[in-house]
Amino acid sequence: MLTAILSLIGWSYLPHLATSKLLPIFHQFYPALSGRPAPPPNTPPYFRHYRYVYAVTVISYLLYNFRQAALSMPPNYYELLGVDPNADENGLKVAFRQFARRYHPDRVGPQGEALFINVRDAFEALKNPTTRFAYDRFGPEALHWSQCTTLREYVRQGLMQSAGFYIVSACALLLFSSIGKPNDIAFWRYLLFAAMFAYELKYILGPSPSSPELFSSVFLSEPGSASYAGVLAMLWPRRVAWQHVRFLHSLFVFSSAALSQVAPVLFSSSREGFNLARMQALLQRISYMTSMINRDATQQIHTELHSVHGPETGTQPTNGLFAMPTACEQPADAVVDMLTKEMERMVIEGQLADGGPLQRAVDNAVGRRRRAREEKTQLQVKPAMKRTETGMLSPTPSPPPEGNRTPARRLPSAAFKMAKAAVGTPLGYVRGRSQSL
Image (tube, rainbow, N blue to C red; front, side, top):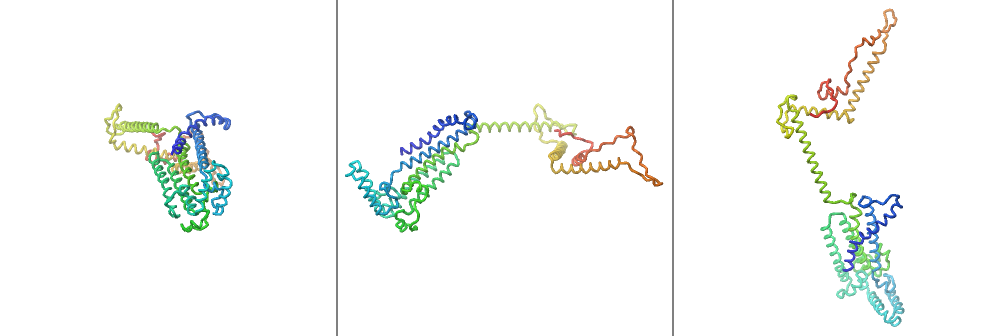
């Protein structure tokens, strides 16, 4: 319990403390590595560097905890005897005789008595296939289960012992998920929990490497099937199932703590220094400004409606005052018609300006009209030759001099005609821009 408490305290304070010490050191080498000066505090690059250094610190501390958990694992009986876990009974006897010749208390003295007793107990436990089966999966504690005599009883008791750890872990996960902020870390914790549970079942219910036929006779498994396969068996081939299960428990606890520490910092929002109270104040200010803009725009619209009522539009003037404009609830029909036509003109002008289908149609019409006018002009300017009665050709009279010529009236463009015909405005009226009423 004390070790678990110290571990939680370490995960809560050590990463931040180490990061605060390592970040200035990193910034000392940063100009030489990147060619840029170190970012000042409380800036986005500074927070980004803090996240990177913090992530490296947490991962390093996690690897350190894994190494400590692996090195602090007590040796199993096979390691004490110096044999592989798949050794048969004869191999165990030979290993025990060699150990007794070297480390018997009569040879090494009273200081070797405790070690000799441990190895002797290990040999006695491993000689019996049933107790060896229970030891491989549940550790030395299984040798003290006096109420268990068969394999099924050992498995049932071992699963009941393992259930306590999973019940406590599941309750802790649910508690952290309920009191913490909603995030994606809970999903990865549950995923680690499920993976650990599946691997422990694999180690507990898998056949023993020393006697696969014994296990298959009880649980109907395939005799001789592979056991203890996986990364842990590759790292520590002389360890047995209960050691791998204990390391998985440590792996789950340390990985959950690392996720809780590094994920909120490494995958935080791009806007450093996010403050919920500050964001709420900003949203309230935006809402207030929006309401003020809406009020001013509405007030201006109603002022414009009051101003267009009167003799100029042939409508009855309203009783609105510019000092305190009131809402124009029922504008006159003539004013509404005028506003409708003006909006139609604005829409047409917008369509002509943004290069849409109407603009292309007008351009095509203008092009056809221009080409027709140019062809007609060319025919009028070209001197026409007329054949006389005697068969001689004579040119047509030349046009009058410039002083007697009447200036030709410039015709409106085709785009102008089509636009004004669409809204019903006389061709003589030219609007330079839209004007509000």
